[in-house]
Length: 113
Length: 112
Image (cartoon, rainbow over all chains, first blue to last red; front, side):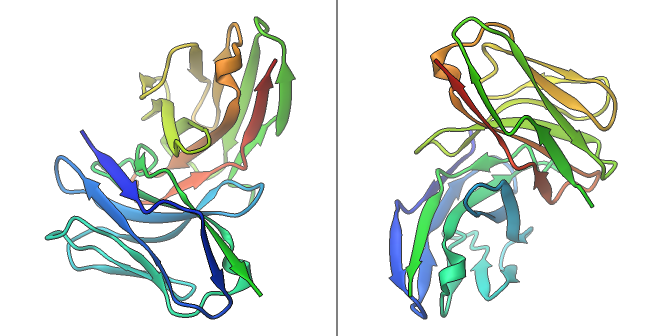
């Protein structure tokens, strides 16, 4: 079956620090990969995505590269802000229905001023 | 631009009571989904509907039923609520090309 493993949280960083949240996956077939973000009291929203090997997804200063050889999709940001505090979910989908995805457990990020 | 709308936002039930969670999307998406979110367990798929008139079980369907009333609406029903169903429930939808999923803001359900 399909699975997603995220680095365990919570993660606490100071403002302007470098962020990495690790994500590895196992999948049958050829998945698309996603990072979603959930702000307090809200639903998930797509942060970035990549649909094939070596693609780099980017948005709001966040980046992740689809690495087929290491089955990874690590999330990075060079300088985090307090407003980046949220829960981050790595996910994969192996068919065209993106909502029918497999999610990681989520990583809670807190950025201190 | 409402996107995916869920009601209610909060609900407290007694064990054995029934209720229906409502979900509607205005993006003309074919596919709709119900997830539950529990601490430390990520999101787990309860049921999904790939198109109007079809529904399929997900990872954790026991204790739930769904109805795809029309293309816009997808409801989740708890016939006899149990404390194990205390969770946050999310509805989501995705379009024909299906790359991005859109989520509602969630329903926080407590069963006492």
